Length: 126
Length: 177
Image (cartoon, rainbow over all chains, first blue to last red; front, side, top):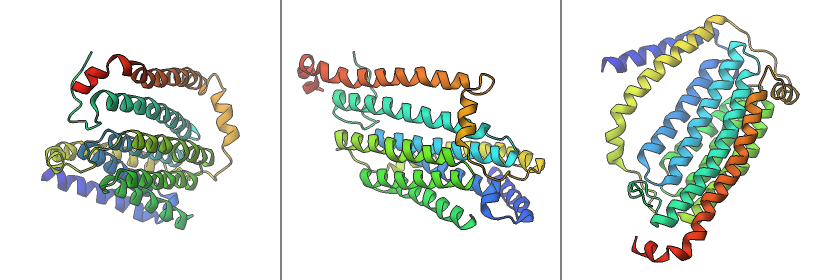
């Protein structure tokens, strides 16, 4: 409980810092952090609550995108130039590669087990 | 730009919400398209024009088409949400979120205390190209990415093809499973 109140207090202090600036949203780091945090939470919720492997992949993509927003936003508002965008580009490339391999594996699992329900495909076979 | 931020941010979050809680996987996949498009728009509001375009090409154009193929080729499974898992995982996620918020708050105040005014957006495609070919910049990730993509190309084909090759040999075994 105390952890929750602490987190809320910190979130409020973040909001208070930003309201001093009162800049438009696209010039406020915290606005981007809120959006990326929401996307991250939704991705985590998808991964944890679904049993279908494709849903887990979709949740992963959402999480990677949330991280990318943070990369770009922190680089822009911290004065790091292009570094954040370069990292985000590498992440996008890796995510596309991961998606291709993961879908091949999902097809393979479907072929072997007749299902892509992750709670039923927990056995290793020869 | 303020208005555009709101449009793209709400598109991203709404898409994510629908993806996370809709009961049909096809609808979820299309909601993911919306969310990824919203993220591309957020890149544009951040002055990352090339990254936003690449996001559209790779994610909205490529990854989701792959996903839809995956849906077509496999799913007859339930897309239902397991509330039991939800309850089981909630404390763990809460603790994780707490530490993540603390870290994020530290990073936020560190960056905010720098007092940097964001630079005026410039076209980034040329600058990014120079960075990727600069030995003191991002040449190494660029070359590693090239090798990795080749590996992925071969690996994905091998994994997916092996299923087709084994089909004759292991069909009886598969029937038993």
